[in-house]
Length: 278
Picture 1: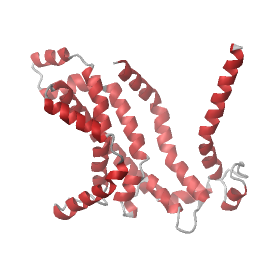
Picture 2: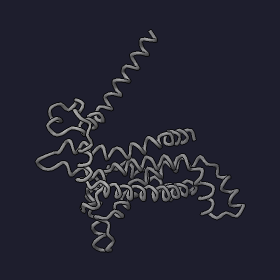
Picture 3: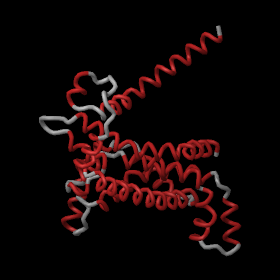
Picture 4: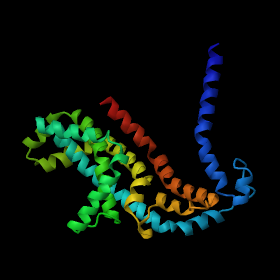
């Protein structure tokens, strides 16, 4: 009987896996078909595995330019988020007063606010900064990076804060007695210990920022500034949708982040595990 339940459980897991992987299969097989072949049978394998639609999609998406924009925005955003969030969380965790608790609760509260409710006020606020202070926040990659930092800091501070509280304060006291400054204590003692949670924060933010479509679509109107997810919009017109090229474009969007996740998955599992234990 136990063997029967084990087989049944594995069968259900296999069906669930196939169900979740089916969209990936549909994207892959249809990225090699022309439009007529795609409409005839969406689930069938392509008659020929030709990369001509990938090449055409890359040209229409201006893929290399979009890739450079995505890399610039993602790398710079994540690096600044890691530095600012880790330092903020450390100071909040080590400062025992009402003000630090209120600031931390504000960070937590912002995690509960849906982005859709902030879209219009955010754009109006950024337009006001651009017009009054002449700081280009709209239609610039740096403005988008600034907004990504703001939206990703709350969850990052929350993760760092929990990890910092598990680090014995005696380490910092010993370093201070040896003559280390506040800056030195953080970068020489605390930040290396934060490595597991730093890897987790980096991976979560890379996946979130790389795949983001909504915020770049509101901020970047210049075609030369489009990110990779934003470039796939080229294939979805008002009257026609180039599904086969769109599928190839979506694969080009997915491939970099999948490669990154496969290479870094052991670190995120290790980081979450160590964070949970601490």
